[in-house]
Figure 1 (tube, rainbow, N blue to C red):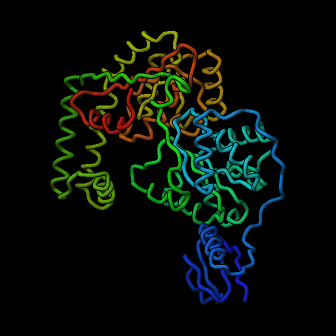
Figure 2: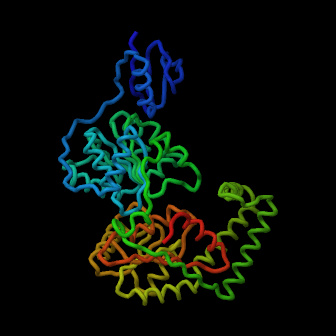
Figure 3: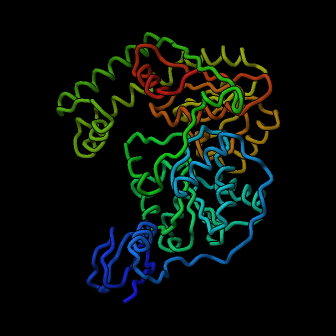
Length: 449
């Protein structure tokens, strides 16, 4: 009896007399069943075993012809693409923000000429990819996200929409491109990778690792790292030369007193519940305990209070004022951790503000004015870290953030686009004698001037 493979709601049904790897018997249908992402492994196993089979898995949308991309790849982009092709068209390419990951993916699509799903984290990025596909490949892609639900030969979807429609999309695409692929390892989004049958997979990111350690799933869902290059290696020739300047500031006497009290309350709380902070997992445990324990909740609130005092200190605003005077004529992006600090800066120095609450139309106007040089400064909290096309700047001022290396690399990438004779500067303003010092060290690991 011939073996038969078919797709069923994010899984494969395998009928026939042989058991295949990665499958389990399903009594309800008297057949074997496997996760859809094992499609390629199962087909390769059957071919190696010289087993005849009929394959009814893929059901792609109508074929559309790509035009040839006229833009040539840079040397490192060519190396990245060739590494991916020679790795069986699976794997992750790690490149700094602004180094042209999108063009590599478009060249991969041109090379394979197969149905393709591109998954992105935000709606602005979905529209940006759509525009690039239309411009470089000459076809109008389908969109899934922001009220759109149109599946075509090439489709761009947000992670949210791909997650909600994974069963529908699972058998439609031979190639899956995951932009900002670290998102795919998140608890919900990992199901997207599992429910797609796509035999060819390309992940793109500036930072492979996740703080929660879940990046260990990516080699299974997409493939391992096939090419990686750092901002430092590209600085000068392909990206701007840059320097990172750390500025340490003192808390005021009152801030120092409040900070010390908050830290002591936090430590007492940890001692009461018998919890030691040795790793991020311990902090996650504190967050879980805070749902049921008043002591844990008070400790968490004290930690947040201490962090806010350190990050939002008044002396940081004085340091910012000096930096703004020193860079009067330069384009500057100011990053804060909290919206209230961003709002205070916007109000005090009359600088346009972008937060997650800024309407899309207003945000686009601010960014266009920044691009055109009408505005030379903008302030933001986290919304410009990722997923929005931000115009070139020469200076970044980081007044607050997490210990995430990814966040730091993304912020660094906002000033790395090469401009003739221009050296980028990243200022990191840190409160002395606080946890910010160790947080700064953590996020800068492997990223130096």
